[in-house]
Image (cartoon, rainbow, N blue to C red; front, side):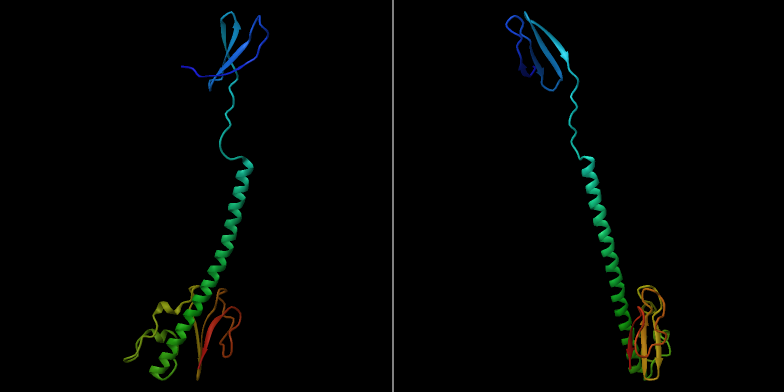
Length: 178
């Protein structure tokens, strides 16, 4: 069974030239008159491809790259802030342990390593893992008579404060205690 999509045009009453195209086949039947028909193959039509054009793909890739770049900057900022806040929390916890040590023993510890072992019935106040900051550097400790300082060297991993007695310099993060 054939399905015809027909169009026609006339050359007059003596010889009617009619054609019909079989749907989807690309072939034409041409009526030459007197009951004669011939098949004429036409050039195949190029099917319009479905999909995206090159400019659409380039724009989409540009948007993806822009979003990825923005996410990388925001992610880097979030990671820096997270490490900074973790260092503040770690240093505060160590400072609290130093104060607990002084309360229980009666004097400040000579070093932070001294707080990882028990003294008599007291301690240990810190675990060895608690002596490192988020940048995997040792937390610094200084004590001078009635005061102490506990600090992290920060992201640059350089001790900018020396042995602080009043404040911390550079990106050092710390606590001063009495």
